[in-house]
Image (tube, rainbow, N blue to C red; front, side, top):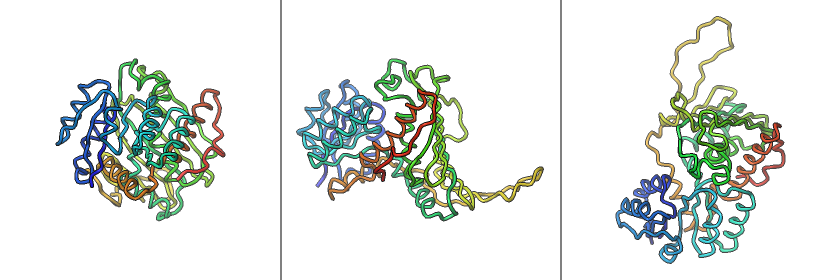
Length: 348
């Protein structure tokens, strides 16, 4: 039996998801596309082999489907998710889940009341390189980790009136909209509760953003690990691109996203001032150059529907990660460090 899916919201992310469906057409049929601009819904429909009907009102699509993928502006997530769940549909909601804790809790309770799957589209948790890196770090294969750093550098520019640039609609700035992926991954990889942190953001270089377009986050965890995340939508050039680096007692584990490689570096001895470092080649731990994590994510969503399973990216854990960001924002506004102790209670 194929699952019947409606795609609600046909902007940039919807087209990205649509390009991944081709690997899952044996399990899924897209039965409707929806967007307030009919032309966009029709354009995405034409990417599908069956060219499903396109609508401007999501309620017209609900009788046709048993599940929905919501790819909407953030401030619309809550109401659409609640309406779809109350209509008896399973929901895969784009990240972040909601713009406030009360919105997130409302969606969680509605999913429970209707006994439907609610999953958050944190696709990076499904990337094989990320999965392997976490496995290595949690197993302490190269000794205990003491520092993890995540860089995401890209150029994402919109008109200042676009919802992505408006703090009330996007939910904050670059950190909330995009950095939520990487705060989630940092929490997931470290496996310890955060105790203190800071966020410093700026819209210098990204004047289209009402709040920050560039973010610097530092977090210390209960187990002593320190974490750092740098993210920007203002990069006009980059060397790191998307890079994860974890320093362990025996060396450094690196995920080079653009190269599709997971690497282990063990090239440094005790530092001697003036000594010349020797050339070396890092050990390649895994290669995944053409991975489509959104396809793996969608397959997991279908598995959860079929087996009444709990998603890896469950809404409770997703809300816990957002609570960290909200507290970082609050402390930044007060020019203080963020007390993160007690923020995380049920993160998986």
